[in-house]
Image 1: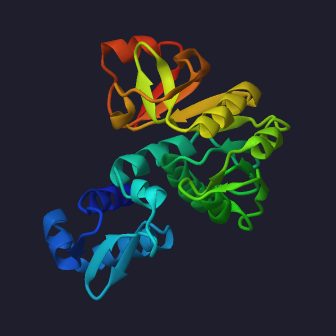
Image 2 (image 1 turned 135 degrees about the horizontal axis):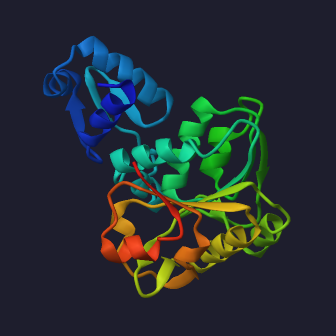
Length: 251
């Protein structure tokens, strides 16, 4: 088993708020405890897990809010998507990364494999992950901080983002519906997404399987606006037709 596959297997065995014994995970994966320790060192450095006294759990903020809870959902799937999405980014690229939780997983992967990036973002988490390392240049869209999203998305942030022309926008979404397209729950985040769709050379949409078939509050775009879709399960017939014009990657 490849290291990245083993790390995903470890994450898939963890549930929010629960700890698992290192020895138990080693037994389930049929490897030594030292092998598990080696993988946990990587996952801990990425900020994915907390590892203490022979047990491991998913990382969470001390004062856990809505964003922190969403970071703990579908961790294995988001990790796979992030690793696949990172392959579309090269050293030295100019990219926009939004404030969705899957985008934050992409930022974690990029922090370990790419350098000299120019990163535009409205996410505090992405800024903290990619700023000040590997020769990256960071532009943070500021304004009034939305504490639930740990992001800026007001009119000041929207005007700031509109100045840029990134090579690639890495975007997330709350819902994908066959009849209504791509949808979000938050009006200001939807506005940020629409700006990114309009100003980027290419758009990569990172969306796990739970987003399909759901309805959001506000429509942000159509599938025709997406150049690359990275997801974790094969699309059914309706959604395959919907994204026929996009490069679809199943991680």
